[in-house]
Amino acid sequence: MGASKPNPLQTVAVDLTTHGVFELATGEIVEPHTPAGGSGAKSGDTRFHFEGGGRWASYGKKLVERIWARGSGYTKTDKLVVGFYLGQTQAGLKAVPLTKRDVAHELEIRAGSAGESMNRLARGNILIPVQQFGAVVLYRLNVRLVYDGGSERQRELAKYDPAPIIPLTD
Image (tube, rainbow, N blue to C red; front, side, top):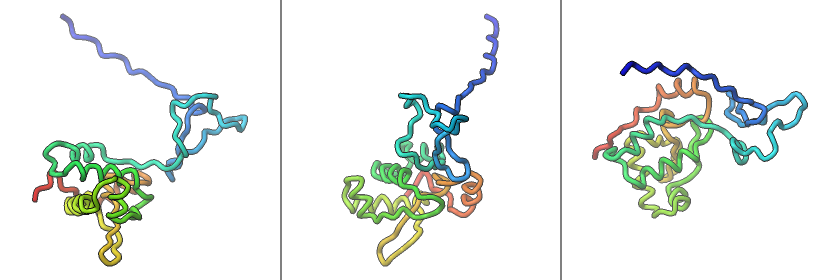
């Protein structure tokens, strides 16, 4: 048997008048511009529809995979909290404005479980404490895990967050 020939590279063209696009500087989803000034979207085309627009955040897939992996030292509840924080990430380095009790309520878990998970995630440098009001601590995710903003700024800020600890051992 002879060696198979590699497939030639294929070019894929995307018609930006039929899809939503986002502004690189802000991460905001914006409508595509068309010469006629219309929305540009074909009627009934929902392939790339994003409800309500909003912002994009880039996250480290390999790091998330390592957290979710068996033997990572993180529990199912820890992983649930990380997933929740991925969706709640604020622009820049702002804290998610929710207490441990608020997070527990949103995830429908016990406040004690949420608190234990958030403490473990903070010990592993996954959650970073940003603000403290007495016993209440507000967190954000490590910028190496997720960042709502430009990738150049994310790389710069990653120099200052501690490296996540995976696997986490007691």
